[in-house]
Length: 165
Length: 351
Image 1: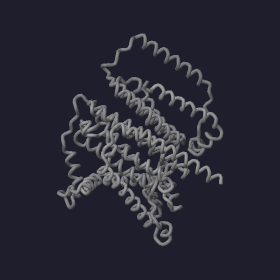
Image 2 (image 1 turned 90 degrees about the vertical axis):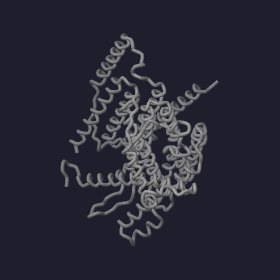
Image 3 (image 1 turned 120 degrees about the vertical axis):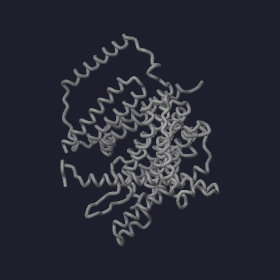
Image 4 (image 1 turned 90 degrees about the horizontal axis):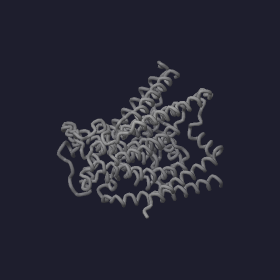
């Protein structure tokens, strides 16, 4: 099975990289959003390759299914077109390139010496829902509950901002 | 036979199964259009289609042929690629959900056990959720790419409606999962067959919420606001003609079929039928499987009939009524349902 997994990995990686480039390079914002959705699907495919089906499906439900719909919603209502988009100033482009490059340097420097043990998909079953649930509710129950309070406060914040008066 | 370390018979078996299920859902969707017109006619005391073939049975073929031969118009101001992408996504996504529904037990053909389910994944219900949440893209992209304000308004309505009703649907399902303890659809069906009690009796409120949300997710009346013709000139498919319009309409009927099958599977015992366990000793397993498939099919058809019955009985909701029902009635109800179910489960496990 090794060769097939390698082929699928290659295909998914190429799709992910190409569509991620599409997000940045596309002139039309709606096309960018669609490219981002394809990227999410490719990454979900990678999760499935690592035997983390639950993570893959939740990734699609939350990001591709909910957040990107809201992105698309806003973009469609604003009706941004390539012609109407204001031309960005030149110094903004340079600033973007420099800060992006700096991030790349930091990431490469941080990951250069990091040990990355190879993952054997068959032996690794933490991504399956049963094991994930046990880990979340036994080992990591405090961080899990604290993050739920974070979500609650974000929701209350949205309601307070959106209230009319 | 293994070549390239793939079990080719397995591959052929799955491809055959997928084709059969796809053809089945397309044929059911086709005849659902006929059924809808017949049911409407029956409710309104008319005859309905009766010219093409006996009882108008050839009417869907005539309709399909008409749609294929009509002129295809792409508006000049529309985004061509997205305009074609919209109905394609709607159609593909509608066909994808059928992969995890168990259509029956196992058939034994030439010593080979063939499961009548394409993929028994351990996250079946979540897979369905993921695919359903993709369904909104077809409508949104189609409505936006038409470059028409009515289409855009309809697709915005569709998006907010589908997102709003996904929440109570998910909460109703969480309560169901608390009682079953699994996400695999096959295991849920087997639990219902073995205990003999259908989940609809354990989770009556959850089933009711799920049914209402299924109406909304399929954009069916009384929640057919995205295609409210007297407000929006026809809705998100206003600019579509020919088979691209046909795909949008057809996707709705496939969705209806799949969600009926899903409700039968989750809440009404799937391919189980009364007396299945006692008959298992006297009849051959293959016969049991076929009867089970027919049982699921009959349950599905009953749900499709309910979909049509509601459409021709209940008038359309106003948009604010729709949102109030979703957020102020269904979500608190499903939260209460979840809380009560959780408390009872906790009590059962500790006593």
